[in-house]
Image 1 (cartoon, rainbow over the protein chains, first blue to last red):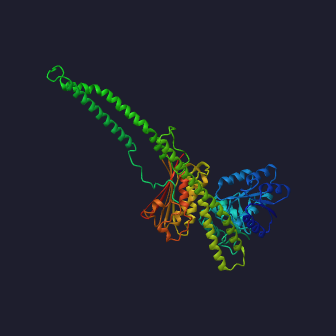
Image 2 (cartoon, rainbow over the protein chains, first blue to last red):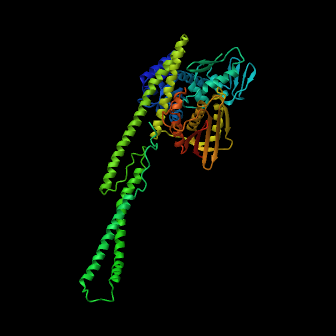
Image 3 (spheres, chains in turn cyan, brown):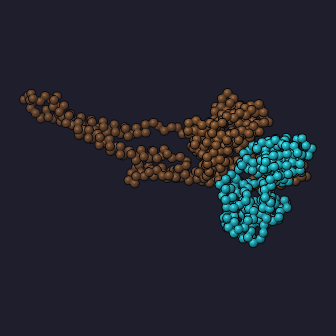
Length: 222
Length: 363
């Protein structure tokens, strides 16, 4: 899968290149916003990771230009943490998602995977991991035919994990998707909820579905 | 760094117009003494000039004196009033200067004090004060700019460290001992990250560069929603959570910031609690105020520390021994959020019960 990284800060660009290459992506790097627009219009990328502060034209303008030219390549914006305004502006401009700096590599990868998947298929209503199923429409979770009683928050957390099954969901991503917290609250909220979820989903079964990527986040897989 | 508006200076001396009053008094006294002396000499000369051997029975010296006094009352009153008006108009620019200077804070140092344009001493004083405050303003802006730049510059190396640790942690053949070490270092980068983010938020807030997006928000819903998280967070310590937020309490607020504030208070109520303790949360409307209270059991905050818990990076002696980690900015940010919404955040602590009270204008 081909990814374009648009980042003028060389060390951050290098970190992104390293991390994404290790995950099996084919990475191209450019440092300027205007160059990025030309590159995206001329060659096909599966997704773009773009900083907001860029020489040439800034990230927001670049996204706007691309969307005006009817280019729908998924774009993941990078910007300073906690800048809710920038995030809303970015999404309004036509970006698909947003990761705050300083970011975790796992989060960039998880969001890129979600973006490239989102392009292909519509959002599934019935999610399945092994013998665990989650019916998003009727809000019912069950494992091996037995219904699991979940609170609204636990349901949302399980849904976020199952939509990204097989990939590590970093804490920061779960905080944003489940709690809509754009900042790192410095609590172990995610960890205690995962513990509760594990009690309900995994405790009575031999096969564990919820896994911990220590220091990074959590994932669900068969 | 303490809060810029912290009441560290003593209150101004009362009776700011005392100099004006003193001058008026001196003027009055001098005028009156001068008039009295004039009266005395007028009366004295009158009798000295007349032949004392020839009596003038129709006008006694006493009657004559009272007549002179009566006649001089009018010019005396005119003089006194004129001098009072003159003194008052002389002092008005000074009074205006005081009023304008009293309104100066670190936030509006760039707004100049009034200059009358007469080029007198008061104008020169205003000019000197203006150049002083503009230098101060520049220094404040430089400090803010520096902090903003510093936190921005720190973000790149932090990202690189963080992604580096992540990549190292993803290596499955990592020895368990090394993994533990890496996890501890990564925790520290996360903490550093929180400090840098908090610092940059507060610096922007000081410079009024943080835009709030207010909308009508049901405070009671937020409190009930948060209570579930508090219950889960306090589960390990067997905390008992009670909530009293039944009536509708609405505020006009930035939802994200308000939730950030509430989570911070809730998190503290769990962290500074004791095993088997309690947390009570409530939202209510009293008059024109929406009030959210959160109380927790625990060791409490000593009276000496209480006024300082909102200070940036303040850590009370009671926390230095406990192993509670924080950015040291949580309550400063919470207080900023409350004040940015036209509200307040206050703390009390007594008999093992600590209460944080958030007050916001209700709608």
